Length: 167
Image 1: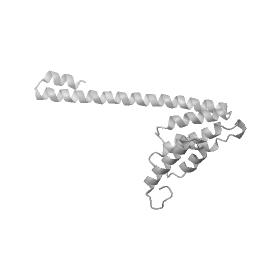
Image 2 (image 1 turned 30 degrees about the horizontal axis):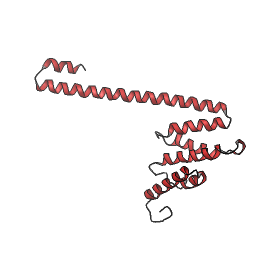
Image 3 (image 1 turned 90 degrees about the vertical axis):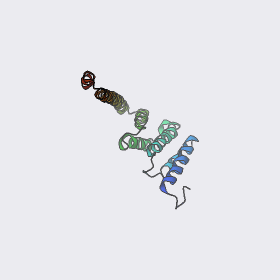
Image 4 (image 1 turned 180 degrees about the horizontal axis):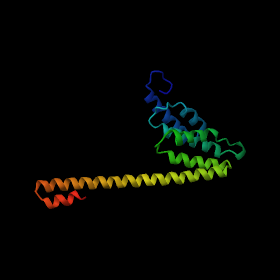
């Protein structure tokens, strides 16, 4: 299916992604990298596939002696998730792995910056989640107020209607 010419891209990408992930799970990191690089950027789970590329590069290099490690492509893939895939559920994972790689490479100053960026990201994420929670509570309150007002109007209860107006 992967090599067939008449297979729609969507199905070919699904097959390529599954094959690449299977290669990764079998610790064939070079095979996984080769296969996953054949995915089109339109694949719906492209960010997940790129993270598999990040992990493949990381696992392959971490097994090598320090002097033989080359995380260049691994960092490129991590940066792609971090900067080109806004809102990806893998963004934090990419940032964390990138920071760890930078630290392994001995670039302590950059690693500290990366870890601080992660801390900031988590703060922003928490603030956004709190905002969303508050917004939902406000919507619930508005809905409750609307229901109480409607009920008060149907029952011609002016006092209840006025209280609901103040919610």
